[in-house]
Amino acid sequence: QVQLVESGGGSVQVGGALRLSCAASGQFDIRNVMGWFRQAPGKEREGVAVIQIVGSRIFYADSVKGRFTIPQVNFGNTVYLQMNSLKPEDTGVYYCVATTGWPFRPHDENAYRYWGQGTQVTVSS
Image (cartoon, rainbow, N blue to C red; front, side, top):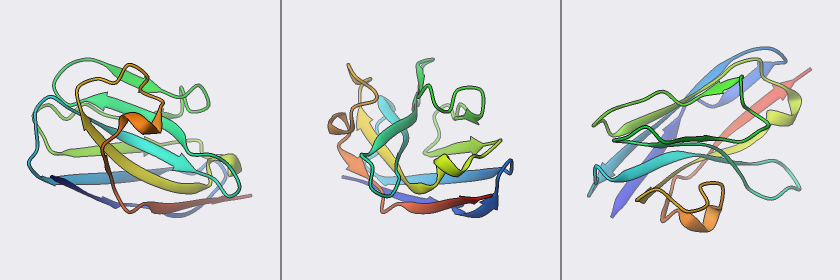
């Protein structure tokens, strides 16, 4: 079992920045893939960014490319999401996710075995 705990959510104005953190505990595997999904009010859950803990594979949703970064944390058990140039459409609950092995479809929520409780991000104009 892997437990995921997010932190760093909050409220920010348009154009601002936030950094989310997710710490994993339990039976952590170096083959793990960790990342972030989000769910805006009234919308389906969306894959935002995913990274291989040991390796070079990274996935970003088109909607966040150039604005969000998921830094490498080689051999670590914490993943971050640096969010810059935030827009109102970035508002939602952000979930940390983890699984073992790079998913065939990294944007597919069904590919992830472990989920955090979520942290709220609100971007206001």
